[in-house]
Length: 418
Ligand code: TYD
Ligand code: MG
Image 1 (cartoon, rainbow, N blue to C red):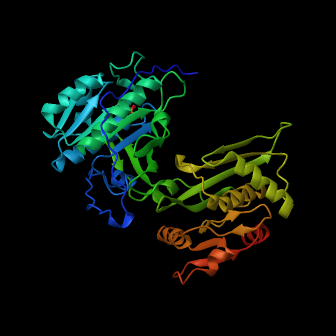
Image 2 (cartoon, protein in one colour):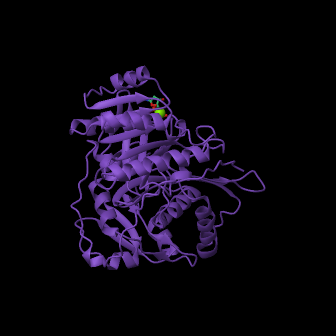
């Protein structure tokens, strides 16, 4: 249960209602996007920052959100955009220290600290920034409500005020939000419906890789990702993520296969690892990291029923190396192959990639964009690709890549292990 304070709102209603007009007569203003200087960030946004947009960047505490936004603001400041970084969490000295570490230097980038959003609005008047970043939305409060900063009511109210400001002034605003587990502090989820764009900054704190993913975007495709590496001197862009994801791949080890999956518009090769072994427990374990747990149970059932490979009494661990999350059905073929490979203790040819969806009848179904996936695999030196027969039939000639279409799980088994 979350307590919310309400108040009578909108005394002077600003009418934003327009006249109904035929869709053909609406004119499109030429789109003008601002560049952050970070190509990965721009792509995730759908090609840059749209004026007047409200962008929410969510992520676990300590993942690097403040670092990312500071670097992006510097990039924007460099293009002549007067940027304001509003921090409710750190002192100006702390921000300066981080800026030193990142070698961020610009006389177009302003810093202000404080937590009362109404006061901040007053400061905005004389400065007239072109762009504002609020770090974090949970630290801000408005005097209109009595509840504590970070409560659902406060977070919504502050965000709504910023939304009005963005739409009225045409100034893009970035909001940073911590993902929280407890209910006391409202996480970015309560704002998703309100803002134009929602980006999540993900990654494992133990790993250097960070992934910026768009989960909602009114100005571009969703599921687009940008990949960064956290270094001593800040975040650096990774323009070829496949290479990073495959860097530490063990060669010729049972249970390891590579799949080309699609993240937004971009193909990325990732390694799927499985470990299958007899379970000492009455109820064998099924552990999945980076793939859907239920998908594994489903695929195990298909293997048992369609090719007689009984994994019911085995512990099964499946992991996507590098910390990426794969939720495409196209990964099915990879998961199935890695489980078979580990169970049989026979490795899959290291030059093979595979993709396709597995149905309950054991059939292999086609997936979208096969050509894009195959080209990416080719770029990274793979020479053989196993895909669904229906995908294969729609493909033209693709150079010296050996393509093999399979129709059932049995055919897949035959082509990998016979
Ligand atoms: P930060 O941006 O403060 O995280 P958030 O705002 O999401 O809470 O960054 C936190 C971590 O990043 C911190 O543990 C240290 C690390 N870091 C680096 O490794 N290199 C750097 O250059 C910076 C600035 C931070
Ligand atoms: Mg921070």
